[in-house]
Length: 103
Image 1: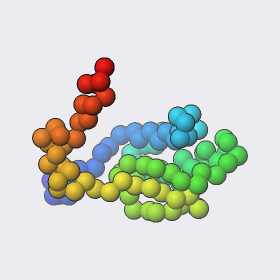
Image 2: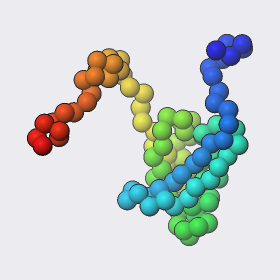
Image 3: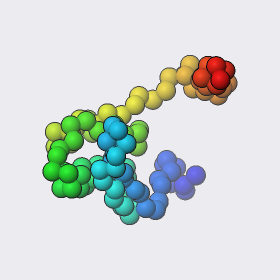
């Protein structure tokens, strides 16, 4: 725990990889000691420069929370899990065994 009592801050390089819905990598960029939310704008600019297209919707993890839209690109962030969801995960009930049972 940091001595100032605040939440931990991750230090080091961050890598932003933007891929299409089909899995094609559209852009990749490294950032030195940046908060995730501060990397979105530069990453979107890189993809636009490389592909000559603007991304309409970007889905990211909760590290990108804070902004809902950047330069016309909608930012989708998953909600925090609810207490029953967290409890189910801890008990292992979120695992779906149906696919492996049919083999």
